[in-house]
Each structure stands twice: as structure tokens, then as C-alpha cells.
Image (cartoon, rainbow, N blue to C red):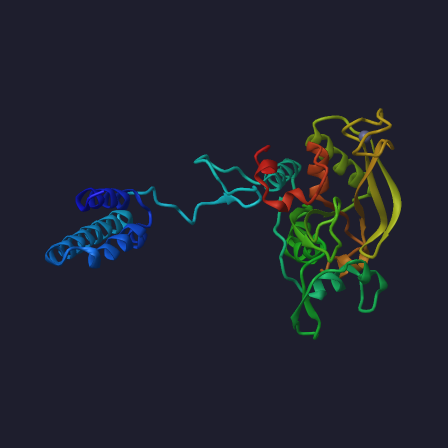
Length: 346
Ligand SMILES: [Zn+2]
């Protein structure tokens, strides 16, 4: 191969290469350099000049190729684009609109149903004090039932020197709601509020337990309120929510802030008690859904409401559970997983 042919072969190689500088280390160069001393003396200078010219031509081609590579018009990568981090290979989201998270959507539905029943919706807090978490709810300091609400605490302390807490139940809002709407009672109206919001527990995670989950609190106070009204209110709500007639039952239970207290169960909205292998109710036909009861007089007193004149009921239940039953979701951890193949079903 003569020098001219070699020059065009190497510049062609440079033009195709993603790493053009490596062509400058091609063995053909070494071979040509090795040939220089072997030339006849009169030929040697011009041969050397031609080799040198070839090298310069290849070097120029390398620079041109480098410039071409750095300016090449590639589709820019948007590193801020959301992607499915759980997919084995990054899967970019299509340009579709997202949807509201299933739990948030169900919380809106829940608020709408209770709104039609005369309940206002109130938000909870993500950090609260032990006064609202326990004291106002008839758990005095040292009460053993405090241990049932194992949650997260801050290093920072409140005025009593107690750590602040991530609320373990939405009941932390009861005292505030009773005070906020106390004037309703003086006007002869009821206090009626629901609190669907986030709560926290120091849980070992499994298919039924999350450290962060959602509860809906209900509170109703007026003159002459009795437990039959509590049961009817919850039954009416659940029948609206599941869109079918349901049986309900209560069993005696214990909570410091209600007296009497009940564990509230509903007939299985999935199998209606007809499937011995039902995954939702375990074949029992009943599902324990929430805790409830008549508000303890001390809770009313803590909000300056006279328990000799007014009575009320309250409940607290898990929203995750309610939604899992509605859609047949088998694992509570799906809600916080951010997995698109789960979320896109809603
Ligand atoms: Zn069932």
C-alpha cells in the first residue's frame, strides 16, 4: 500500500471512529517510520516528508472528527424526568397526566360522604405534643395504655419537658375540634367533624402493618347523643362507601377516651359471609374495622364542655384497610411503594 492510499485509509478510519486519537497509534505508522532508514539516501528525505505529511493529515482528520463528535446533535437527556425507579431498566414516564394517589382519592370520597351527613373535615398534624396525644384524651401521665401507642418522638421537647411526637392516632385532634366548635352547642347545634389524615407507629412492617398510614377520626357531640346513633352513623357511612347494604356489630372493648368502648365490625363486603376461603374476612364473614365509643366525660371536660348536659361519640379507623377491602389490595405496603404498576390501576 502506498502512502497516499494509506493516508486515505487512515483518514477514513478516523471519520468512522468514536475514539479517533487511537488511529494515531495504528501499527501502520510504526511500519512506515521503520521504513525511513531503509530508503536509499537520496530518497530518504522526501520519503520522510511524505510520512510526516501523512501524519499531519491524519492528525487534522482526528481534530475534525473530535469537533464533530462533541457537537453532534443528540437528543438531550432530561435528567430531571421522573422514571420508574423500581423497573429493572429505567423506564421513562410517558407524557400522560398523572393521577391522584388512590388513598388521597378515597379520603376525598370519605370527606364527601361525611360532608353530606353534616360533618366538617379537619386536618391533623404530623408533629404534636403529648398533651393532645394523651392528656386531653384521659390518658394521664403514667397511664399504661400509653404504651399501646408506640410512635416516633423528637429530641426537642414541649413545655412539660416531654418529647414531641408523630401522632399515633388522629384522636390528637379531638380536644382542638371540641374547643373550636364548642359554640355550636350554645347555638343548639352539634359538633360534627371527621379527620382523615396521616398517622405513625413504630411498627415492624409486613403486609398489614406500615409505619405511616391513614386514619379517619369522627367526633359528634350534642344533647342526648347515644350509642345507637354512633352505630347508625358508621353503618350509613360504610353502606355509602361500599355501595351496598351491610350488617354491623359491636363488641365491648377498652379505650381510655371512650366509655363504653366498642370494637366495630361489618359484614364482609367482599363475600358477604358466603366464602369460607375469602381472603378479606378469612371466611368469618366479619371484619373488625375500627374502634369507637361514647366520649369519656373527662375528654369533654378537658374542652370545657359539661358532660352532664352534652354527650357524644367518637371513632377512629384505618383508611388503608377500608381502601384495601374496597379494591381487594392484598398488601398495605403498596400504598407507599411508588410502584407505577400498582398506581396506574387507579
Ligand atoms: Zn369475606
